[in-house]
Image (cartoon, rainbow, N blue to C red; front, side, top):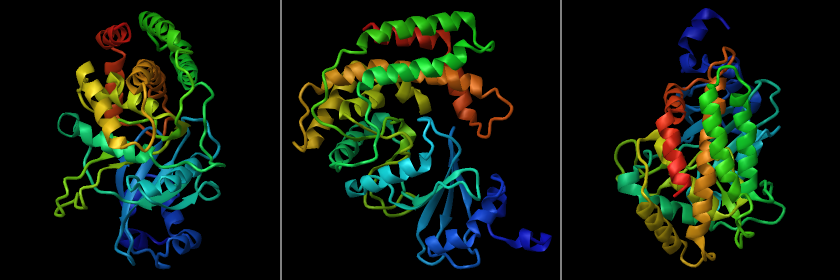
Length: 357
């Protein structure tokens, strides 16, 4: 490409963050699949990035609709076809009216070494736990009520609590085996894990299973006031995005993750008290409106909150080591600050008290 054409192409600066992406979005197959003009007119602007994905926002020049191009750099679930797994989950959940509609997927990695998905852009702002907590219950109830057909692609752990703890052990090994890890913190994390293993076989099999998100931090919710002006716009519908790790599991697992202090503190400084946690669970049961049974929900949520705390701590320990590797592709500054906070002695002690409550 000549230098003068490169200079005049729309949206080249953000595309240059990812080697080969500009050529990809100008490729014939990509443009034909999305009904885009043969010559690129749309601009791609970096929207957000996490630890495993990078998202770009663009407006379709024909339909005028805003869309999100999502690049996947790795899989927390160790899946060979991570982006297709997420795409199929979004297709399954379209009927909820609470998730983005997927439009395109390419997991071949023939042109780019990353998985690619395009989905609709949804408006909204991150969940405010103080002002909007119960609205999240309504959103989750609608998503969990979507029937999952037989022959679905979702992974179903035989024993979800034990599966989470085994995942914890796998993640924490990175910290335990690293010379960067502090011996005193290694000892504290080991003690916490040993405490929580007592919950491994504490739950009977769930009576109702659905598609659960498993990663319910505040920024994965998009809340809308119903004001049709400004960037939010829309009809007041609240949404849940980022379906990187869905499972076929019970609603209590999602609720336990949502309410756990390691989740609420991740993007905010909020830690809910037990009264707020129970009130949320009751509101969720009301929002279900009899679409499935919720007997004994709080007791099951309590178990999942406990194991979720250790999932958060061990993930942070692993990521703390990974973030210091020079070859890492994605680095998020706010994440780094939280990794330090979660491994602080005072936070670890708070988690111990929560587990022993």
